[in-house]
Length: 445
Length: 146
Image (tube, rainbow over all chains, first blue to last red; front, side, top):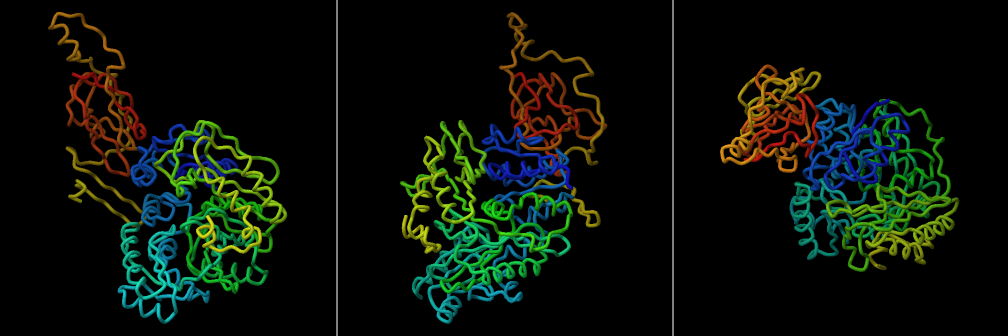
């Protein structure tokens, strides 16, 4: 087992990783920017190193600073969390070059699956159905037009180096395709430094269903079932649940097997999430792989009873999977609401500020993952997510009731948060009746 | 290399290694060695401020810590007081520094970064020891300004 690691992240995920480390007897070194200097989780870490000013580029994205911190604290490995450097191939390579274990996939697998075009190609080779679209990148608008007319509108142009819902544009006809192509290309260039785009059929009103996977160095892989993340706004997930309420046993098995096939073919190691779209006929199509642990991992932890961060640490320590797939069971229903410091009344504008009153919910079936407390100042420099509220009950009806109660109990003042929107969604007729898709939030809220 | 002010690069493959060096007076790489703590040796040179005060005929008032200017580390790394293990330290207590005076080196990822005073005055306190790990913003020296 690793004995000492550095966590190259902040906030709730840094705290989450510290907790898993301490339960496994691993020392945890935290890094922080000046904006996070008063974060209480730093006191829980075995050591905390200031790596820069508030600006991400000079702190949490500062590779030399982080590697230097790793060297002076003499750690064996770095856990990148999610976001920041978690899917940065360059960072993973530098860790390897410096003899530091990167808690995540090998560089080659990250590079392969991080390229969305290569990932689609690999999925096709693994006999997994992908969303119909281009075989590779599209260089010119004329190619896009030809393909779009062949597979049928609407289509979506996506960045090959993309992620996080950026560098994407939908087009419904030839005219809008021209501008969509140029806009997506420009946004991709600006956001990812790589303007390459590809084209897919745009599946109307799909569900977003993803499969959690863990793989070890010996080529073994296990799935931990699926999560339905259809409640999204501008491609940002708001609410996630497991199991996906509309899957039958056979489709679920097919979906999870497809995820394992892709992961094994890529010689992937550690945690990953394989994402699919489910159309109204319950056909699933591969879209991409996220080569990291995800924000919504607690949902899977609640229904399977497995600690995914501990799995990551064990795999990185060189342990192999001794469980068999049939030992992993789905029990009950779990739902997660992401609580963001945003004002729903003002188009979800970020609301940084000091929290003067903070009362988290509790009671049976409630889990709150957060670094925030009364007196905490939410900085404008970072992501607006301040807490994750997860509930777990035996049935979906009970889970919804518990989530509504917990959201009502949750006090975060005076800053504005997305708690009221979550409550509205959980009370919405369509959500309760499972008649939702990825366009639901934008149509109704 | 020129763009980044590098004068030496070493890259291996077996057992992996990277070594980078920015321009500096001496060539050989600096390792972590036991060097006597700065300030424990020679006599302290009288600070320029006190001399001036005496020359003007006023009392020599000892300056409090609040008047001192801190030189903070702009990076995470390992502090070295000397350019090489067997050379003299860049500064000592009482050394007069200007804005561009190199006061120490902080090594990060095998790159030796020369840290400039960015203030002028005399070194009043040395807060770290040779080979000590330092974090971003950590105070390294206190300077009595002119």
